[in-house]
Length: 67
Image (cartoon, rainbow, N blue to C red; front, side, top):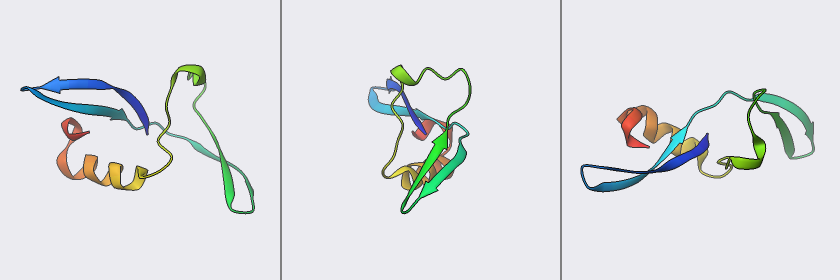
């Protein structure tokens, strides 16, 4: 998931995230690299690296407008 933007809906502020597909890269010990989609400007994105599973579960359970 990547950070998309800050948003307000019905007077309630929230942060919006976007799911992107990544490919597994090389694993070295406890670390695994990822390959981001072509054309993605890596200088201007923020990738979720901690808590992404919880964020994804909340997004799937509550629908697209939840996160």
